Amino acid sequence: MLETKDLVLDKAKQEDWEGMYRNVWSCPEAARYMQWSVTGSEADARERMRRTIQFQKTHDTYLVYWKATGEPIGFAGVEELSPTVWGEAGICLGPAYVGKGLGRQILHCLIRYAKGLGAKRFVCSAREGNQASRALIASLGSTLFDAEERIDPRDGSPYTYLRYELDL
Image (cartoon, rainbow, N blue to C red; front, top):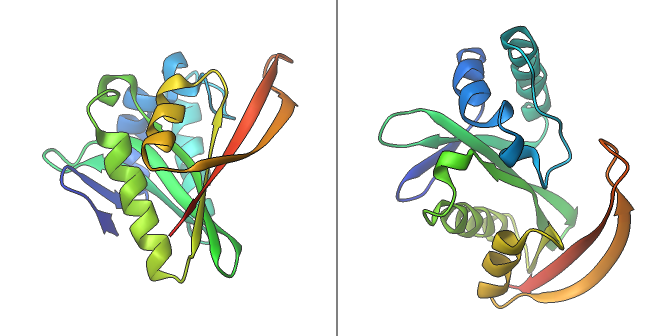
């Protein structure tokens, strides 16, 4: 479990399916810059939560909970890219929680966690069109080191995937 001023990052539980469905997975705005598609039904959300729990058993990924209520409002994680380089493995908040400084709290929390695991450099990524994520990443003092043209598998549209690094 990881913690910030307003949030708890913890492993998913099956009963979290409803909050994630309502707050994140059913929201096209949340999926816009991500690699996943909107979840269309409660049954699909229950199955998605089952898969999420399985995935989280072997990965440093978490649901993000609003500390005041315990409500799941997003997800985030990190991954080891090399022994001294770690990167965020996706950060997503439901639309009702965007623009409140929570992404900043999550990113700082993930960086602290990675440093504790020996990271000397931290990598963040964002689609070129995701101005909010790019501004957050830039505010850390990170440097753009890679831009790659990609195709969104959901609809075939092209996008530019940007990668930034931050020396810790």
